[in-house]
Image (cartoon, rainbow, N blue to C red):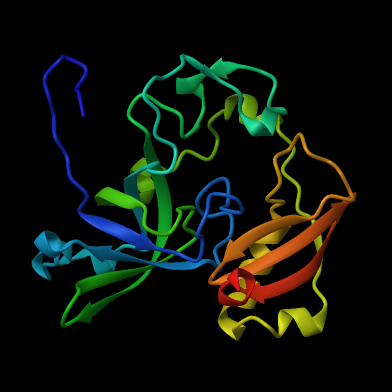
Length: 238
C-alpha cells in the first residue's frame, strides 16, 4: 500500500470478521443500522494476545478499519455513482463511502458486546451492528470515544437528502421457523433496510440473498417486502 508521500507502507490484517453475510448483497449500508446483527472478530495468530485487548472491555463501541476485499480494482476513478442517489449521479469518491477507492479502506463503528477467550483463538470480540462481509480483513481496532467521536449536529451532505425509510416485512411463520431463533430478528432487521439498489423498483422481480447459511428470496411491492422462500445453502446447491 503506497502512502501519500511516495513511501511504501505495508500493513497486514490483524483479524478477520465472522459475520452472517456471505456476499455483499444485503449487507447494511452503514454500521449500526441493524444492531441485532451479531458477528465476531477473530485475530490472526500473530495478534492473539490477551494483553493487546486489555482495557478494551471498558468501551461500549469500537472502530474497525478494514478492507473492501471483494471490491478491489486496478484503477480508481475520482468520481463514483452512489446507489442511494439512483446510480446515475456522480460525486467525488472522497465525498462518499463507496468501496471503489484508491486504497479500498472501510471504517465501521460497531457495538462491543463482550470479549471471549479461547484456547486456540485467543481473545475473540463479540460485536453488534456490523456491516462487513464474512471474512473481511481488519487492519486496526480503536476504541470509540463518545466525547470526541460523536457530532450529532454536523451536516451530512447529500446523505441528509436521501430518504431513509424502512419497509414493512411480511415473513410467513412457516418460513421464519426455518431459521435458527437467534437469526430471525437480525434477518428481519436487514430486510427492513431494503437491500435492493435504490434504482430498482420492480414488484415482480425476485431477489435473493444469503444470510447465516440460508438463501432468502423475496419481492418488494411499494413499501412491503414479502419473503417467498428460505432454504439452507446446502439444499440450494444440490
